[in-house]
Length: 223
Image (cartoon, rainbow, N blue to C red; front, side, top):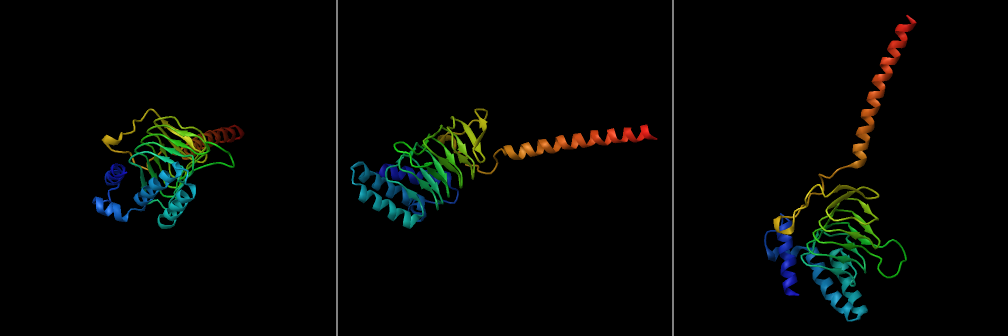
């Protein structure tokens, strides 16, 4: 438990430039508080002491604004930045070195039974407001853009943006490993809708130029 806590604190220091020292992280970061309480709640959950487990998770939710079901399985060096509004469902499985930002949801899609929440690979970043829904898998080293809604499996080494989520980068850009620094850029992501609009504008401009030439030719014929 203490070894994992030390790793969680170190993960914050490595990924958040505002974090100055371990004591500050331990006292002031609700994401760390939520992880500590979740590990305790998860221990009770595995012992089938479900009421105590849910009670601890609800206390954590009240004080941190982060809701993690005690049944969720979370790996090492997990970092929740800011965290308000984060929701992680019961059958969620999260790998190592994962980063989640505020407002993100790892949830279900209805009243399914059994495995009904996502499985998140290692070194994955889930940006602010992103929704990953259903028993899908997000592969290692992938990135989910801010506000995206992901309803299908995401292979490893991909970037997903949009509603519904669309893969815009796959294998042609290497995602840094945790030892070399984590790619936490939520802003400079491709915009497939915007790119399509730009393409359509160019096409419209070309057609307008052709139409003007055609109209000019018609006028000369009339004259």
